[in-house]
Length: 116
Image 1 (cartoon, rainbow, N blue to C red):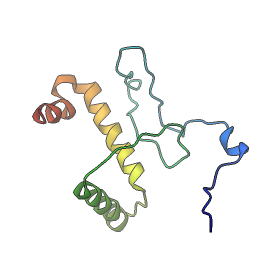
Image 2 (spheres, rainbow, N blue to C red):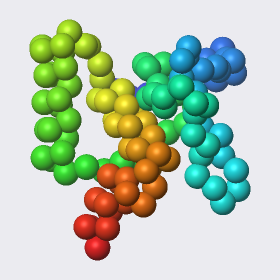
Image 3 (cartoon, rainbow, N blue to C red):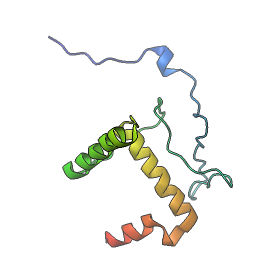
Image 4 (cartoon, rainbow, N blue to C red):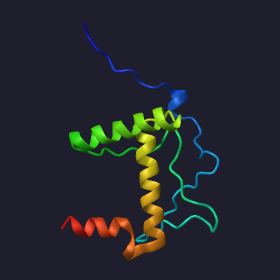
């Protein structure tokens, strides 16, 4: 029995993509951090949708278990049925916004300095 992967059709591969309401795309300039969202608009993680880019991140068993616990707590305690990817995208958005606002004093810089 041969297991063949399920591949997307041409309609899926060549579909138009867009951004969900209220989600601001990152704009990059060569050698610079993405621009902060316009005044009054907070950076948000993108909701569940077909994304155009992918990264692979390796996590420890403990980190994966903690992420799953958060997912279940959001569902049980707050009525939010979200997947792990959505939680990660929101966490990234929060860290990027903090970095853009606070720079050297951001949580990201402080935590990365302690990893040395």
